[in-house]
Image 1 (cartoon, one colour):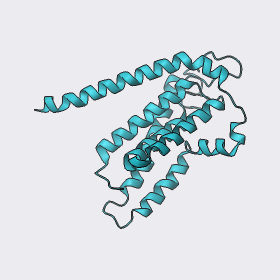
Image 2: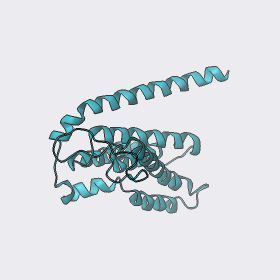
Image 3: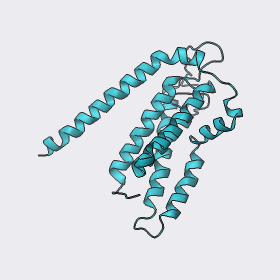
Image 4: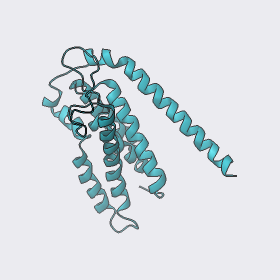
Length: 204
């Protein structure tokens, strides 16, 4: 019986992994063109650019998590939704940082689009200057994915904000396309795992 029940889940996992690999592969092929042509150096001098970047700022989601927990006070397990809203971007961010110091791919250069990697002997535990995956995008998508689980009717808003954050990182020439695509997949996967194993049924 367990084999029968686990087979659909295993098929879904394999399918999702295949989709993720294809998406990252396609984004790697497009990295050079995007790095050369998708630029707006003054993006964070605009109000909309700063707003989009803030969706990938973890303290923003800490405040949102506290607000959600306070809103839920009086319910049973009133803290749970706030904890999930904090955990998803935080855990996704940690996974992203670990990948950064493992892959060690630098951000796009000012001229050209060739990849460069930092040696493990050079600040082995620092992610400064490393780009794969994007820290802002991974946080934004972790938050968007968990909010889409809790408030599904507004999922288009949450994902639009996360995509906007990712695009702003490309416009700022801070990341390759594959940096933000990988970040999006990580954020979504972390939120899905947290929802599956830590969340009860919620009614918004």
